[in-house]
Length: 170
Image 1 (tube, rainbow, N blue to C red):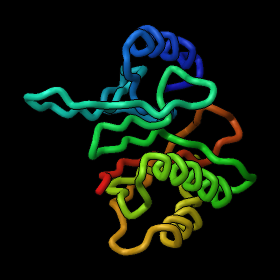
Image 2: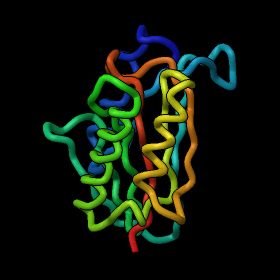
Image 3: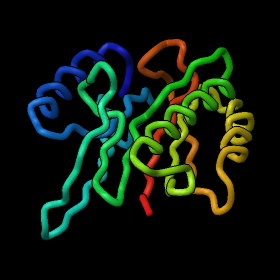
Image 4: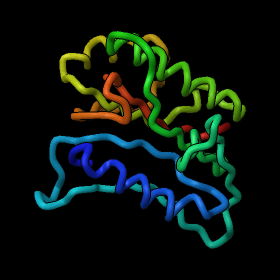
């Protein structure tokens, strides 16, 4: 999203579109410096699975519940929502974010060995090295694919890092 001025509007749309449905999406709200189209105010990235049969799915709720899920499970896939962490540094927040993702994944019978994709959003490019160190320490070979994305803002001003991921349960 471009700028906090549209944050509330996007939240209202998200509520209207997803809350009435049985299963809401896993989600992350990130401010980015630019979009593919210069006149865009919101850019949405979505993953869809299209199959001929109905895919059972279940949501892992936050407590209290939010307009989006902590994770969306559509076995064998687990889509983990963007998660911010606690701490004063990017490294501490990354550690905390990963621990939250690990707990959610373990609650579904998975582990970091099941992770296939990790997206790490950073407020400062200089944080890439220390956050990468946390990633390297927590994930053993073969590691999931990882992408680092520069973001200009997050859901809370004190956030420096947000991490989301996709796992495939064994």
